[in-house]
Image 1 (cartoon, rainbow, N blue to C red):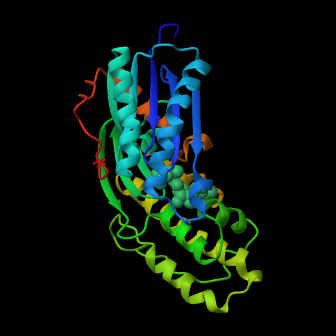
Image 2: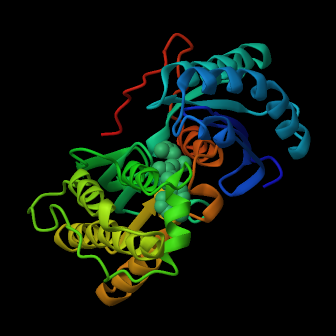
Image 3: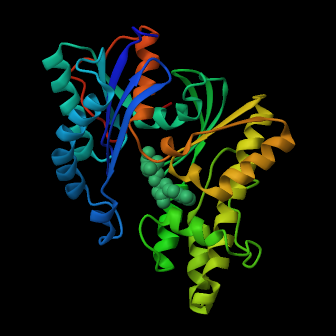
Amino acid sequence: MADAARILAIETSCDETAVAVLRGRDELLSSLVSSQIDLHRKYGGVVPEVASRNHLGMLAPMVEQALEQSGVSKPEAVAATTGPGLASALMVGAGYAKGLAIALNIPYYGINHLEGHLLSPFFGSGVEPSIGLVVSGGHTLLLEVRGVGDYRLLGGTVDDAAGEAFDKVAKMLGLDYPGGPEIDRRAEQGNPARFDLPRSMLRSGDWKFSFSGLKTAVRYLLPELSSADLTDICASFQAAVVEVLVTKTIRAARELNYQVIGVSGGVSCNRGLRREFEKACARAKIELRLAQASLTTDNAGMIAMVAMEKYLAGVEDTPLHVEIDPQLKLA
Ligand code: KG4
Ligand code: ZN
């Protein structure tokens, strides 16, 4: 693989500045993530203006460091996330990548952030036909993955994304932002059967999800909760989210005849979710592909992976006049 192509990828769709250099399909020579979580924590969520300013400051030194770390002076191509995400944040990364493409005279690939998440469980092992569940802060999507670039959207959330529900419930409970890891940690110590919370749309007969009713149910319980109940409410809430995600994903694989399920996005590093998916897939004799931990929350390795697949497949590069799209769709 001495002459395998190297791709530099940039991810700035939300509050993580990330840069990666990938050689061939599976050699991640460098993968840097600078989280701005501490800057946004005092606002209880991501402030777009703060995010884009920080991307601007972080990006150049991070690109330099990634290239240096990987011993690459001129990659064969450069890629950046062009959506979905925060407009001002996306613009920083895509603009920088286009500048590099011009300066180094190499092709540029604009990449869909969700495609990065969707394919991340297959990093290094090759994309397989599968049912993909993407669970992040902004999205909850169930898709049919027929191959690279060939997706069919089965359904998504009608209100809050799964990660958003974690974040909002955590905020209600007085926990830090982002709430997912905070709830995850407490849920490990709690009793998931203590509070009977709704499993919305579990039997809706479609592939849609809804988490706002669950959030409201937790809100109604707040007045009667004391700090001693915290671990139990975290465990009960998490169990409700996980049960719906696992059940509907397995059902999709069964009904559409897929032997493989891929789970990705920030919420996919949740320990309860990983455990339940493992159990349910073993029972259903379905192969489970979980993104490795460093590829679950936002990162540039997954963006480089999608760009590499396109590059190796001979897909045309993205014209430099193509702009970012905060609402970019996957299928
Ligand atoms: O994929 P990601 O980094 O960013 C988006 O594209 O949105 O996902 C971030 C989301 C946040 O809502 C965060 O609370 C959630 O992933 N998250 C978790 C865990 N770690 C991160 N949710 C549940 N359990 C976790 N351990
Ligand atoms: Zn993401």
